[in-house]
Length: 205
Image (cartoon, rainbow, N blue to C red; front, side, top):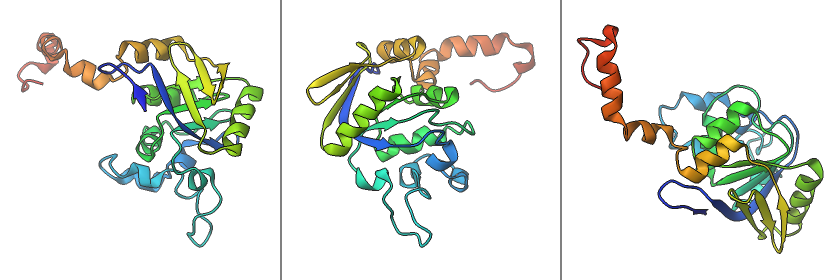
């Protein structure tokens, strides 16, 4: 759940889902064979599709299966590495994830999350381990990631986290949705297009 005015994202709250392991790449988050779909509509069904199934196709003990109500994902180092597919954060968002807290994120993955209004906050290993342990002990525990204060509240306790200056500014100012932002300035876009010689004679944007 986001606290927002227009498109500003000041905080996200909800139960957690701890996904342990370093270097969890985008192919694990959304297997490549699902990228052939022409829309993102079904991506939530494919989040961690292979990782959460055994060889017979049955659901295993993956955290996604054990924490179906999770809204804040807690991860370790270099989460979202690998290919730059934007389908990965789309899959997580459509599964129900509103924010991520981890030791570190692949830069492009974090940028793709920002473009969806999903904050990616970082903290040291000890802090992440503690948050994971709290969630594992009480899956219904409420987490609140405060973008403005750069804190995470876990039950009754609050710890500091870090959000990049660029992401924090974009979320707090509501300018993370670059497509919507561009559409709001279509007059200026058209004016620029009209001034470019090699676009002369083409239909309007």
